[in-house]
Amino acid sequence: MEKITCQGCGVSIQTEDPKELGYAPPSSLDREDIICKRCYRLKHYNEVHDVSLTDDDYIKMLDQISHSKGLVVKIIDIFDFNGSFISSLPRFTGNNPIVLVGNKVDLLPKSTNPNKVKVWMRRAAKELGLKVEDVFLVSAKKGIGMEEASEGINRLRNRKDVYVVGCTNVGKSTFINYLIQKTTGEAEAITTSYFPGTTLGFIDIPLDERSSMYDTPGVINRHQMAHYISDEDLKVITPKKEIKSRVFQLNEQQTLFFGGLARMDFEQGERTSFVCYLSNDLMIHRTKTEKADELYKNHLGELLNPPGEETLQQLPPLKAHTFHIKDKTDIVFSGLGWVTVTQGGITIRAHIPEGVRVSIRESLI
Ligand code: GDP
Image (cartoon, rainbow, N blue to C red):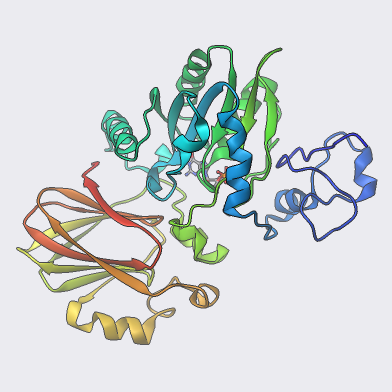
C-alpha cells in the first residue's frame, strides 16, 4: 500500500488501531486531504490526544538532518529562550548552517528595542554552543518580520533544503503555516494549538522543483514549565497579547508569588523596584518573606493559583536558586517570563518547580 501521511502533522496514517498514533477511519481515505484522528480532533474540537514519543525517538528522527545538506532554521520562543532551546542541536545538525528565528515578538512590550533582542539572541546562542548565520525576530501569528525572515532563509539556503526545528510550543507550526499560506494561499495546512507536543513526523513542503522545506517533530524540552502543568494552567501562563509590565517597589525580606508556580524573595539590599513581565492573566501576590512558606503551604491552588487541581497532582516542589545581582538584570523564570531588577547590589532567591530553569541575563528592556 502506498504510504499516506497526515496533512496535519505528517505522521504515517494507519486505519487499524484508533488508539495508536496516525489513526484515520478507513472511510476518510477517499478524501484528498487526509488528516489523522488526533489532528482532526485538534482542528475541530480544539483538544489534543496525549501521544508521546520518547526523547530517543525524537533524536533518531532529527539525526536524519546531520546526514543531509540544507539550512537549519531553529525557532525559539523569545518569551522562553532557555526553555525552548535545544541544547543538543549542534549534534544532530552536522555541519549544516543554522539560522535562529525568535518567535512571538508581538508579546514583548512596545518599548523593546528589537536590535538589542537580536544581539542578545545571538550572544545567548553562542554561549549555549550554537553558531548562527543570522538572527530574525518575528511574530508568526501576526506576520511581523516574516517577510524579512522568509527572504533571509531563501537567500541563505542557497537552493538547498530547509529543516525547521524547534521544541514544542514555540510556534513552529504557525511559522510554517504562514509561509505555506503565502506561497499557496492555503490556510490551516498544519495543525496548531496551545498545547505542547502536537507536531509529529516530518512534513515535506516543496519550495521549488528540487528542494523542500521540512517541518520536523517538536522536541519536548524538560525545562519547559509547560511540561509540568495542565492545559488549563498553560492557557493562563501563556501570554496572548503584548505584556503589560507590572512594577513593585520592594524592601528586603519581601516576596512575590507568581500564582503558586514561582516565587521571588528579595533577600537583601536597598529598597528598589522590580518590573514583572509575565502573562497579564497570571496573578502576582506580594507578602513578607517570613510569611511566604506558610502562605504557600496553606493557599497553594487557592489564592496562589495556578496551579489548579490537575497541575497540583504532578507539580514538582519549588526549588530555590540564589542570585547576587550586580547590575540591572533580568531574572528569567522559564515559561513564565522574567522580572527586571533595576539596580545591583542585591540578593535574590528565585524559586521554581524542580526541573524547570531559572536564570539571569543582562536586562532586555
Ligand atoms: P509548535 O508546537 O511549535 O508547532 O507551536 P504552535 O504553532 O502550535 O504554537 C504554539 C502556541 O503558540 C499556539 O498557541 C500559537 O497560537 C502560539 N503562537 C505561535 N506563534 C505565535 C506568535 O507569533 N505570537 C504569539 N503571541 N503566539 C504565537
